[in-house]
Length: 216
Figure (cartoon, rainbow, N blue to C red):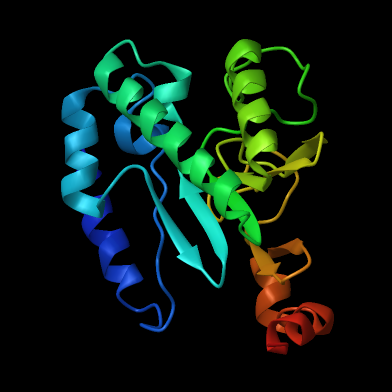
């Protein structure tokens, strides 16, 4: 915490250099609101970065952004967790009713790292919560959940839901290079690929993904 103000200012400065044509969507995590969030830490995030959970539409695709710290430990802010739960149920009903082209979820903590039945640990949500949430997502037609937190690449599937866990652009806890995941959404499918920074700098995005992005 001693360097939080400086780190925040540094990140904001760097983000100002991103092309203004590229919208930025920020997802709150444990380093933003804490492993046990409180009304105060959530309010600080909101004042600095904006809403901690929200939805938006792009080209007939519904995107949901969740504050997964509420799902990990809401003991410091049960009312905030209840509010997100009610909002999420309403959003998933909309997804089901509108039969959107795709529905995609962003949340910091993965539902699971490899399997819906894996043991509970620091890097996933507990079994009871993950299955309840995964069932809700599957019923509503959510195609993919994109997460981080693990600082390694991982993932798996549950019914028709894909769980995608991306490593970090900074600290690595495994063997993956510092990098980012490129995701292309078409009318038919969602395609994604993780690129190391060096590979992306030297070779750029693969021709197959570029061709998909050029299609109208």
